[in-house]
Image (cartoon, rainbow, N blue to C red; front, side, top):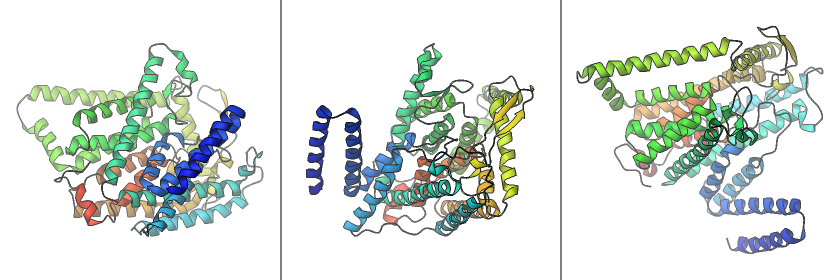
Length: 489
């Protein structure tokens, strides 16, 4: 834009002067402001570039479980600017800002229930445990601030839908997401290899979580969030191999898959691995040609029968040993993972206890943290432990505790509508590409959320926005995503 050129030159001159004649703090603030302004004008010019910026921020926006108050991230500044820049772009170019979808009604109803639950914050007991040393630590203010963030993420999903609906935009968005996930995974694998071969300095970089035993987390605040993020990418790669519909070269798909699977394994996130397994089964089952081909090769063809039986037996035995090791580590007090299972059991109990106190509308949106402790309990070994549980570690229990029965029913309405829309689209046009891996990612993330309940994940709403793209995609665009037609790159 012509106006931006002069503003950009002026800002660069100010940055140049401040670099030599001011402190590093002032220079950093000015640089931060210049990046935000540049991003804002870039979004006005082309919202697709703004969306690339949000995809880049996905690994950096996760909040930790025990975030009292409202931790500030760069995402909190860039997201409103992205939305405002997109709206201005649509107004200037006389384009529709957002369009309706079949999920609007259950989604709006769920948000209304969240608003009603916020008023439950006034009825919290005064002796609830919390460090009330910040304004946003008060229950009502905490609920309002988190609700605003949730609304911004929902608006972001609808904007993703509008941008991805444009011709050839979805291809580039998915490629960019896969490339970024692969680069982050490769970096994480290298970091973990340094640790594995004796370089303990990696434990002090913040790239690994050393709570109990070293786990890879890269730029996320928890290893679980890294596993959750990789679920949004791995399903695409698995689908490309199963369906034979490739956006990129097959060699690159194999490379991306191996690197991301290694990064996923080094997170040691059992819930993420369980979600990935379910997603893989869904992808195979929805592609009848591939599933029939595997079945015929393994069970009907007599060639290499003994080798195939040995192969199948080895996989089954390995899975049984893996399940046994995971279950034993979860219940054995001497295991490093026992404490994690121990905490989850008590978080489930705390969630049910909070639900019993306010069963209709819950304790208020994002206010379970005020009911989560402290508890002094004894573990199996007899040691006394002080627990302050800030999360229910289960999305269903979180909704029950914070939104009550009404919130759970509204959430189930949203989930059932999503399932209905997915199967209806698949039954009408079974050749559509992308819809299956997107739904598989959402399903895998939902399964993982049975063991943690953090919803402020940018990649989650990014996937939801792409899913909305296929609900009402223009015919001229939807024909690009048929299995028997090449995808333009």
